[in-house]
Image (cartoon, rainbow, N blue to C red; front, top):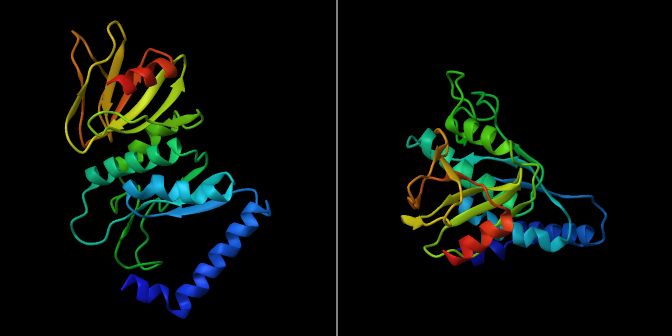
Length: 227
């Protein structure tokens, strides 16, 4: 079905236009590549690798969550937002605009499918809390994680002499921080920061955790690679 669709005149015209844009990018006709992204968070690293092939800085002018149907879960939306934003920051995106802020029934769509940061009652959803927390670290130089045992994903940024990480894993994993290293964790989308004490391991699962490590980022990366 996909091959048949791509063989049609509409798809051929779209792909031709796309290649022309890439040629203009490589010729430095533009200052940045504008990314609109509403797909699943797990695809973001591959999409970024593809568009960065044009050689331009990537700016995400529209980022959000397309979640149709009645099974919408605000907490899960918040967790997915944390994963998506972390992948974008770790992939080199420095400008990121989340849309929509509010759903306006009847103006674009009668039913909310592009999920807003605020509910119909005007209250902020967990995704808003995620953006607020990650915004504090968005000016730093984020990095993708090295390959970590157990399939841990996320990103890292040097911050105030230490390191801030956002970590998650599709199956439960325990990471043991180096002896003497001060580590605090906070669940995303919301939760207080708690120190790891008594040599306890750092538990990583499907819910992203915001981790601060009182160690430089190079040391933290070595610890992750050795985990």
